[in-house]
Image (tube, rainbow, N blue to C red):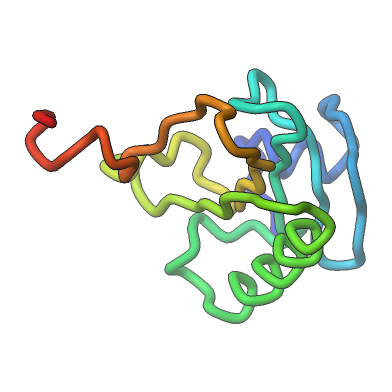
Length: 120
């Protein structure tokens, strides 16, 4: 299924540009615009699914593709969001694979210097 208003559906259909990293029958991997770290990759199912909670089967195969890419790295964060309150901005399931290294300076919400309520 395709959503005519979805930028990821347009990329999958070849109607919008993207830097393709890998392509599978069921998913693609692309570089995001303004990635947070060198090598940051998005894994996107070819089937339009709004988020990780909508279709567990699609979510599982998409995560398997993300795990395949992460397995090629020494360290990585694997991240997806569900809903605007969880910072989802494109409502087509996508999984971020973010390569990491010691001291790379990329903070995440759960890093030790940050706590609930915003005080250290």
